[in-house]
Amino acid sequence: MRLWGLPVADKQQIFVDSCVLLDIFNDDDHWFEWSSSTLYDISKKYQLVINAIVFTEVAFNFTSYVKLENELLLLDIKLLHIPTEVAFNVSRVFKQYRKNKGGKKSPMPDFYIGEHAKYLNIPLVTRDTARYKTYQPKLQLISP
Figure 1 (cartoon, rainbow, N blue to C red):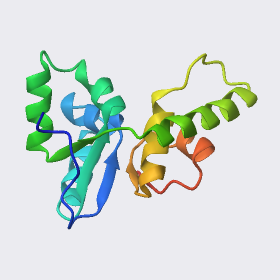
Figure 2: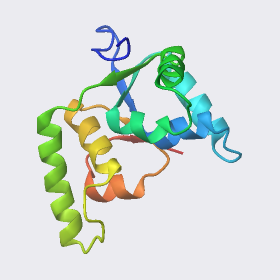
Figure 3: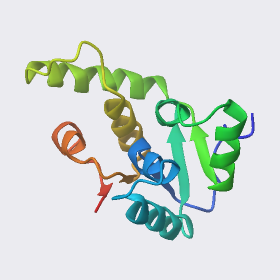
């Protein structure tokens, strides 16, 4: 599998939220310009990374795994494994969410994405900031 692995060592990483990729893949009328130009600018200096949660969220736009893999390769986005420590930390964030009267019965994708970026100590490119600001307030966000 060509996408899995460690990013290029000489580049710092930036985590990409699924909403940004969906804006590009779906040619979103409102967000395409911001999302595409932001990723383009960032990719000049940083290695773009995602995890399996982001991969899953954008996969429904593609008819095959190979087509999605090829698109991510064209965008030079690396797919990282989710460390077990991240999964554990998601349980702590979800516990806080439930304490705050959140209605979901299982952890949401944003919790995995935010905790993974926080674990790596890297910024997250997103336009959906509310949940991240609430449950991962120390996470650096790049947003409109």
